[in-house]
Length: 355
Image (cartoon, rainbow, N blue to C red):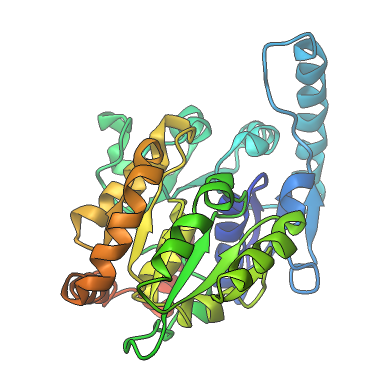
């Protein structure tokens, strides 16, 4: 029987990308609506995801705007209630973040079944808040920091959610003339890579032949292109690319933040990476994500406080010792041998269709 499911998301790509993947897994047998805030809307391909509702939840911060934000949230709860009622929604899935607050509160009022999604190795604040109300929570591990022991029975472990086009794609196995380095900062970018990395890569290019593919802000593209060309380094500089999978597949190594979606995509394509967790990430969830892959022998980890000091030597060690690099590539392959689209699809459908 076809169910009507609302997926609540918003904010950054780290929340929205998993929502679109869940949509793709569930839409064959169910009618799906995605709800997002205005920030998250820009990460949606509106040609593909046409059933979208905007619930623009304000941040709850203690400032002079606090009373007005509370009133707005109350209004959005009422709006969400009638959205769920008028669309005859059967179940709701939240991919985390404060953006889902009005919809989950409305779902509780309507006594709908609520499912949560936690891709990080630290339980997010909004998921912590709604854990008592949910049927199940999709996770990648049982060992999640801050997770209440008495509610661990709600955990449903699935393999990491990865966009369908990433399956059966593998980054370069052979290193020929150039070693291709991909630099990405996640959906919110990474100024530390823009400001501090280019000179180090230029220095390395004196001893090694490298190609740089780097994500940066729109305003910084021409500046970075010119810098690398001055050092005769082949480069591709971009801000956003719908065909991002091709950039991963063309690379040997990635320097990256540690958002769960990014690491899952690098992992499924067997791309070794240097993880530089965002120091200001809530509850240090990026550090926990990176530590997981490091414990499996799949990556190098540099905290931001030592990034400038150590990145050049780490890169030189990788370029001089390909055995360590190839070992990490093999470990990634072992980690993902069961992660297929069909396996993940079946697990999600089984859980959602249980009741």
